[in-house]
Length: 195
Image (cartoon, rainbow, N blue to C red; front, side, top):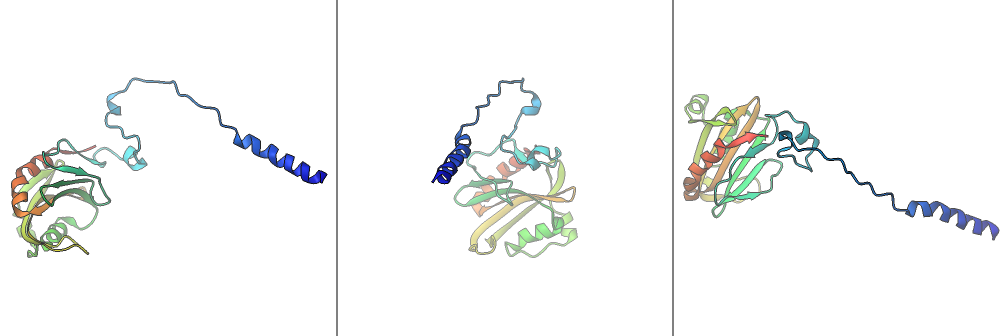
């Protein structure tokens, strides 16, 4: 019986210190914010914090009226909705090159692939200080696996090769809505910049 009582006392003596609340720490140090603090994101990943400028996230200097900003995703660094079902996505990938990506977009609309000569004839368009090409398509749009085909759709956007990375700004939606937003898209693209 004495041993059991001693065991209970020993167990309690070990638990009581663990139940104590640690002392509260207050940071009172301050400093003046500098230009380097502009745009700091408190919950940034290490990659976002330490990536070299010019390789970091893409920022939009303006978003056209009527565009709804949506959360980014794995493949959409910037993501927007407009009109009834229109979408605008900004992305970066490491694969394929211009021809592969241009022809992938065109394939989604059932268009024939372009050869290098036809790609060279596309309208040049500056994206993030790199010359890209303006791509357009119309028709039935097949957005991807497990997604329904959409009729009467259009695409407008830019694809550029920035130091081996493919940067894209792609607008898709009903043909009339894409046509009405084309100039807004061009203005939006001109305002994109790296962090």
